[in-house]
Image (tube, rainbow, N blue to C red; front, side):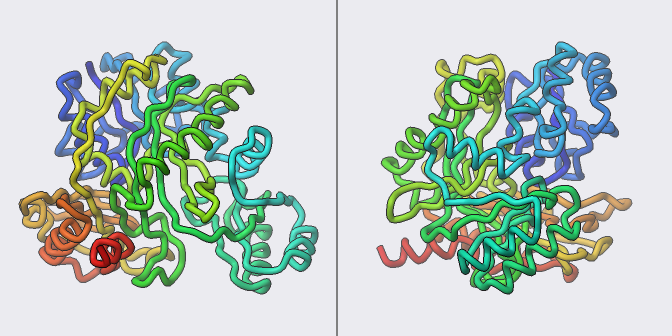
Length: 426
């Protein structure tokens, strides 16, 4: 069948790499894609905000499945519109995508169905929010309710930081995303990401990962969309995964179905593993970025039948095999990120790095300029390596990073530090 993949980042390059390897995929289109996805299929110029244009393209090119990568189109209802046009689409409906599109929606769902999460309060008024902060005290977590490209969460260690975050959000610093704010208790534990495919009724666990949100080494600096990740996350033992499926994913799926908004797609649970057990930080309704870049290289099964089964409601008939190897990705970002990234700098040595054993390089914010590849975004490249341990994968990834000649970029040099420390301590 012909498949259309929507998106242009590192996640989409990883998905394109996996989808293009499927015997079921005759032709892969990526809209708009990037220079990396062009190696896996055909990049097409398509206004993905124009759902009718996307549907027309699918009919013209006999597309049998659309896979939606980023959250924006899902929250905008692209799945609803394409399905209404008779085009099979992998991804949740607009109503179900509220799990990511609205922090308040998810917190209320958790309260209704007994899903463990941080205590919270929601506000549309800055004065009331400041009064709550003064009464509760710090530390607190301040979250914009809507989509904010991974930058709508402030870990406020002091009341002053909390009030600064509230002022920024309510003054329009994050646009409409900050019109409502959720204030959460500060949870203590270790973060992990867990993924499950869902078909509205059944959930199939995928794998775990751990990402690194802060911009600089030692988990310092501002939050970003993610500076690196590794999989599996050692904190997610088999017993912990079973608890997450039973206590968090299962009740979510049942609750969404009970509300009349069944969830189909990939459910990405951001978790805090506390002394009491797993608690939900937040949901995303798509593969993570950069987590997808470490999940796809570990997946030994064909991804396309699993995506189709999730859409068709028959996931209970699917089983997936995963490599026992660890995968680790280092994000190379343009100087200035996560503020205003410097665009246009030339990147050399990508092909050299990608020829290293057990190494893949996924493009994110790049564009072709003649024969050269130049930076065209904040997070620009994902250098991925596989190894028998996280330590081994880390060493291979950084050896490959060092083969890339890009003075205009930077990366963290400690991705995977928690797992490496565990492995060294034995």
